Length: 459
Image (tube, rainbow, N blue to C red; front, side, top):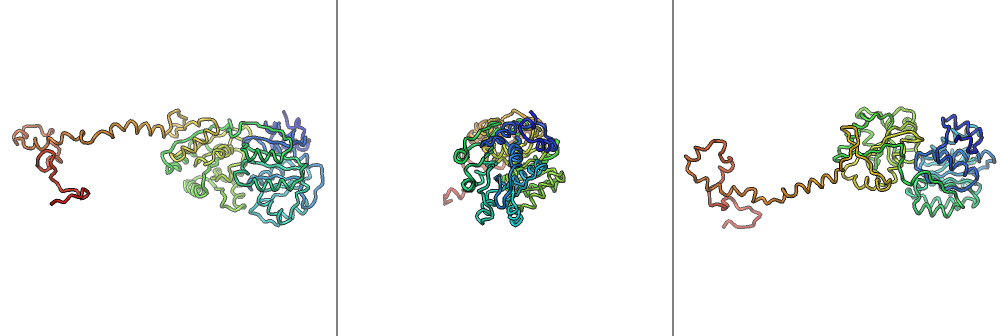
């Protein structure tokens, strides 16, 4: 089915083709007609399925008819992070080039003056993070009473970041007759409650099982003896697995910084992005990555969701994510829009519980990858092998020490044998030198100093 059959305008179809797309993805094919019919929508789709275009494209055609008013945006898109908001803005610029539409981007980390100026001139679509939007609303710089279309993107991520109360406040300020579109990778109970409260008779779309991983991504886990070995293993994989462009995820910002410095010191072209960086630095690093000036990006989970960079061949989980949902979103940076990709997770002993939770969530057992051979293996994982080894060693370790050394008690008796008899024996059968130096005495009698820990007086 081509895009033209979805009901989009010829100008919009032309812009889509200019971006190199001819056929819609499943989420786009199901969502676009419903949005054009002005229906509320709940869309459950894993990352990398093209869901951004599934609401951007029909919104452009809907907003093509209407008039802008100062301080009153006609539509609102809520995103959990600055990076996602900026990416949606890029999509609007690319697909809406044949339409006379104005857009404003409200995100933290940039000057508020330019954002207020854009609002005062009137915008058709406002793309915002909840925090900055609430800030401007409380200052009286924006009115939401003229907003007829609301998109809540990455709703489960909003929940994780604590934005649900802000979203409820924002929804209460919008017209009750608006059209609302909610997109999420999963549908936990708080998101279901939000949808029931603020959506009217929505159409539900689910293009993949919640929290399932993309079938176009070859997933592997690499067992490492300890966390200290992770950097060596990572460098080996980067050099040996035909890596063209890679994103490497760690759980802590400090780990991201240290890992980037380590890779650069070993000659890799890498950069970093995490929450401690200001917005301009993060955007500059992302642009370098997208332009190919660096081919490895070390990230915290601030970059895990929604970033769409073409041609990412590999994703590496330097740390197994603490939240299983983040695993799906991390590896979703590769294998996008029908392409294939590879994902490796480095698993140290302290990561075993986390990787078990990931496998429970995704419903699949991630195969073990042998770095030495470059192949997957069906052998048992480390923890069972260690338990088995301990069980096999137990009988030997529990064997009484006295039984093993019992023959020593006869040493004093043999010491009294005639010297001539001992001289006739071959030299190889002589007693060990240590036993020759043992003090003489009755068998079993201690003739040395009394250990102090016994607390016995020599008198």
